[in-house]
Length: 404
Ligand code: PMP
Image 1: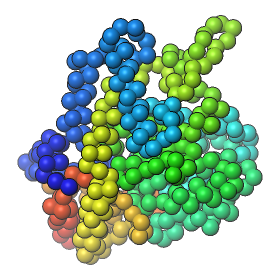
Image 2 (image 1 turned 90 degrees about the vertical axis):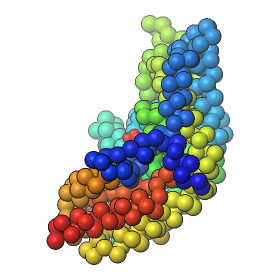
Image 3 (image 1 turned 60 degrees about the horizontal axis):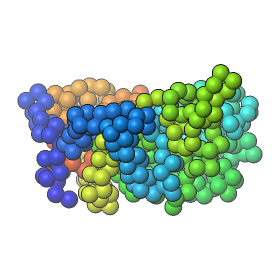
């Protein structure tokens, strides 16, 4: 990993905030974009802008070809069997809502159950709660232990003949825990239950092979994987996507429309109503190719080292509490120090040029379980350095000194 060369690809990392060099440790919220991704967007708008899948003219055909190439790039990135199993969405949130709406309308009746966990992001809670009120399904929730790990024995007890789906995050955006999704999928499949994996916080940090995992759905966001905002991915096994009804109606998702009735397009277009963000889709392909060039194996080794360094240094601060102490963690450290409010800590670090996240991180039920209102969260990307971590730790120490 040539970090200096990598950092040069991200112009924003050389910027100053309040006259201090920026330390960006809010990568769990969104990652910065390398020059090649921004240039790809510009290039598409300047040279290839035309609506996809509709025109016979050159530009439309070219835009369509590039967008479909990006679909194949995503397919190979997560090793899906077919490119038609890759549906482009606005992001993780829309992908989960799509599955919740469409899967439940086909497979769930009143009283049927969906299993999630205590550590889920609101996207993987509220999408299902909407189905609770629409269809009368019930949510069951896997508890976590003191280290912030899922209790799989409890999960087994939650499974019943009425369980229709298990929907679980791969990596927690608060605790950093890497959940044992292989085991969860194995247990679920033994009971004929499909599994959705929320990979919003994992796909940018580790290799994912959906065929090896054998997950039924996997979702992630472009903007957290160095790609553009407003574009995301739903992977679904063809056998499920084929049985599920469309999520939205409109152009492109149809085969034939008449006032007597409408038939729907084939996969994946059945789920892509309206004009998609094809420049975003194409630039997501560029982001994935950029990551592949660095290599997820190298990224993981480097980021794990930074995470350990960050954890060890923070642990030396008196009165610090780290939330999420599993042996299997990725890229995220959430903490509080003494009685210092997370918001004060975040504001004061910001004044030192250090960007961290504060608050409930869209995981209020998890905050309830932890008995806190929020945390300070530092989240790491491969362009961060030990110097970034040193600046964070010094900053935290200065805030602690200010509060006496
Ligand atoms: N799931 C997880 C685990 C996340 O971390 C996030 C973003 N914080 C989401 C879902 C939602 O992602 P988006 O806002 O990009 O749709």
